[in-house]
Length: 100
Ligand SMILES: [Zn+2]
Image 1 (cartoon, rainbow, N blue to C red):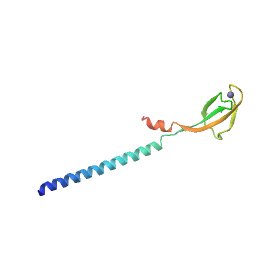
Image 2: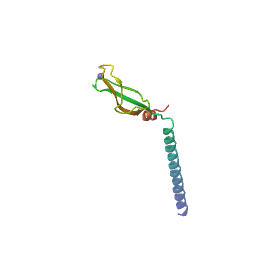
Image 3: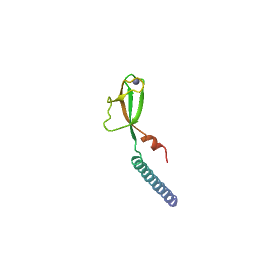
Image 4: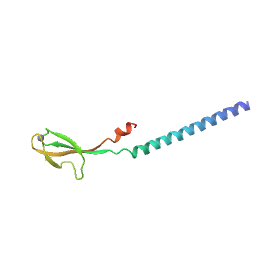
């Protein structure tokens, strides 16, 4: 009877150690992935421009001084004012999902 109890105790101990090791392993993997995600992802900032007549829109690289509502030129279609409609980042989460 004593032997059986000891065997159960050893089994419980082994299971406990395995669980702890797995937990530490999972946590370290998660921390490594979090660190990886920060460094290489370099989201690109783009500026979306749209004609005030709503007949033309385009995207271009963000340049310093861009802001929403800024007039940046003339529409190539109708010659009216072209304004910055939105400024946003692209490429960040996408690159993270695609392992190289
Ligand atoms: Zn236009």
